[in-house]
Length: 137
Image (cartoon, rainbow, N blue to C red; front, side):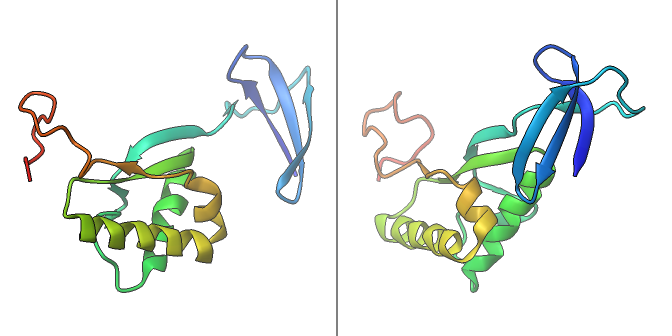
């Protein structure tokens, strides 16, 4: 497959050729087609609580439902993200961590897209001020 557009870094006209899931070549071209694509690396989001009506902080009957978050983010250019698990009981956080692990084992795009976890507790400071809006408990 070939894709023509303009490089995000210097606005040069380029053509990308892919073979399956791999980039085969990136070359400069003189006369790009009439599209206005800007081509660059995918976006990274370091704090995703959820997306598209699905929340990483809810226990799912089927953890594979969480795979739709990675797919929806991918469609808007976010190719790598960290699910955020908000302040909660340690047992609930443990269940949520296992749930994200399960979706990564079962879904290839989720496995490629999820690079780790952003945990917001129970590691928050017990002191007023640094703790912010998070409950002391």
